[in-house]
Image (cartoon, rainbow, N blue to C red; front, side, top):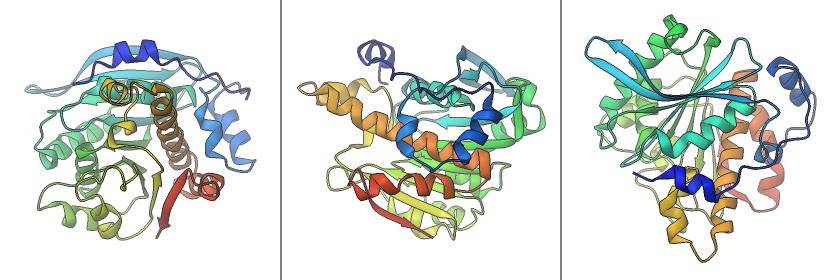
Length: 300
């Protein structure tokens, strides 16, 4: 497990956006009335964040999910973005991402599931978690808009997210961070997904991820995929001590890659939360595609 707290002290948070908004509804109106631009989401959003760490959320007498919750401080009802880690990782590795999402007007929650899998089974636990929050948002917080839940998964955590979406959980869509596919059931579960999914991948010329192509291939429609140039698998977490050690001669490059991932994630989650589709985010990737930051862009 990466010790992300130490790494967070070394990586300063991005500066705050100059955008002013009273609440998430006003921010949403402002953003949707202007040309989409993923780069604006590199900055911290305009809202303060309330942190609640190490929550224990009961799903049944014998099952509790550990979570860190990041609430948009000015929001009443707001969407909930659920972030799931991958192999050998934990909620700590996605703390920055969940907090960044909350600063942009969406409540974020990073959860812990068994970090060695099995990942399809983790997907079933995730589905139970989503169903429980949808029925009773007060399990997490009464300010959650239970009709606007978005799932995010990194690496094999993306397999779990895909499995939950394939089971038809009440979610608006998913964002898969350099997904890795595992399990013979996965292709059939992918074929059953009916909500929009955005795949944000690392540079496969540097770091090919196991069965990543299955996600775009088997999801039948409303799926987009981009790659981020000169990034590796662990850059889809933030912060990540392993990546910092691997690139300790030039840590700023690593931070740059990780911020690019979090900006693409935030744009995608905002698009799903605000519009129920990927169009806003996809249009916002245009400049990055043109200047080579994003490549291998495809959509169906």
